[in-house]
Length: 415
Image 1 (cartoon, one colour):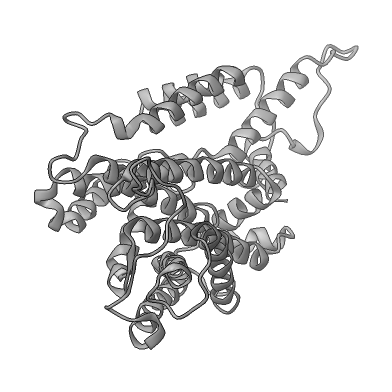
Image 2 (tube, helix red, strand yellow; image 1 turned 45 degrees about the vertical axis):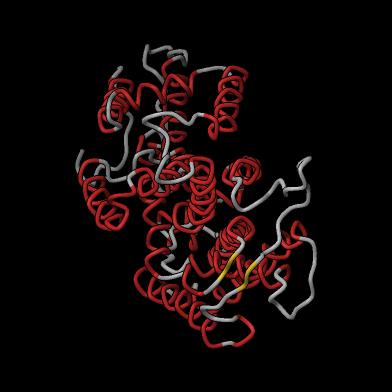
């Protein structure tokens, strides 16, 4: 078709063949078996999917007791504490995925929100802090609120920037938080805060249930939080806000032309991502029991971003698994832990070459809906009764062209 003809309906059955060919090509690009498994999963009834998910959740809660070779990190690292570290990184990756994966905003200073959440929990529960003391569980909503406020403070003046400029600004913000923790006397720099609070409860022998050396209850608490966050983020992803984020990620100018208030939704992404980061920081501070300025450097922030890219930006489950992998490998192979940044750097290069969208890429749902709508309309056109002359009534406007319907589907989703 030439560039001047405009869109037209393919004659006979060629439109169906064209769609099938595109889906077959997409299946090949989706890496064969993995794509087939994904298609089989999507074709299962909803009740069957939930049954399988319940089994996965049960296995997740039982993970601290699956302490056997080759899964276990013992004897180099306690397996239950390693499970908690994996869960915390998974939660961090879910929050960062809202910013990077959904809204397409490159944030290199996400560790700042993690630090703010940790310091909030420490300064409100540690005996080393001169501030008001409150129960540890109350510090979790406080940490979420404080970090969301920081996210808005950072987002309002900077989110009109894009790409590399936004990345540099967020990187600087992460370093500013670390430097402030060093130079402000109340934040105690390298000395830090000891004996950070923890949830209440004691065993029969008087030992706290949520002790620093017992990773199982901390892991169960974090897994429960992850499930709640996944449900909330999943509903948000399917809402108008999620569709707006996808539109901004794909083409911010086009989204703004179509009426999407891009700046507002970008600030929302920053605030929600920051809140999840603060929540993970509060959990981390409670388990470790010690917070200082040495835990929140640029390398850690890059590791968070690597988790999202490794798992699959835009896929909350992929980001979660990427975070768990990033935390697990250095703990499993303690001998090579000093080379973790080199290892993940090589892994990211290989993934970008062979699987550029990550291990578990996000599905292009808007385009898939466009193809589905195209198929429905073309089927209806073929079923129309013929006229007295034996010809099928023409479809005006060439609206059945697949490209135009894909575009309309995407634009409709963005609205």
